[in-house]
Image 1 (cartoon, rainbow, N blue to C red):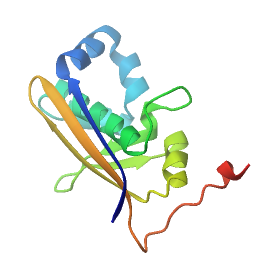
Image 2 (image 1 turned 120 degrees about the vertical axis):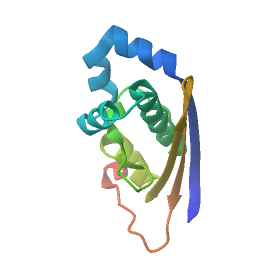
Image 3 (image 1 turned 180 degrees about the vertical axis):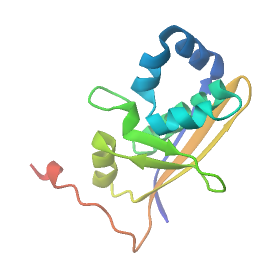
Image 4 (image 1 turned 135 degrees about the vertical axis):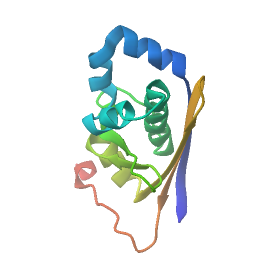
Length: 140
């Protein structure tokens, strides 16, 4: 795999807890997909899970060479956690277009948390032989 980008993020879990307490559903809808919300609510240490997923989204942005900004949606990056598998990022929207433009066809993702902090690291890469999505919107 050719590495095209690396991103990492650390978040304070207390900050996420405060956002959950103050903004509840509005915060959840803005940052997380329905599948991510269901996953976090199904786990122990719910706050830490939400913090880890948010850190993962930030890490993916950074691995693709950007940060969140207007025109991007937090839900354009969905972190999928399935039993027995490494977490994976599924991108769409503006982030999917950016991924295609950068020639990225694989994003490796890892997350960890403790009571106080959550962290995530993403590696954006290109695997030879894997299809690279062509983005014709950038040709204009």
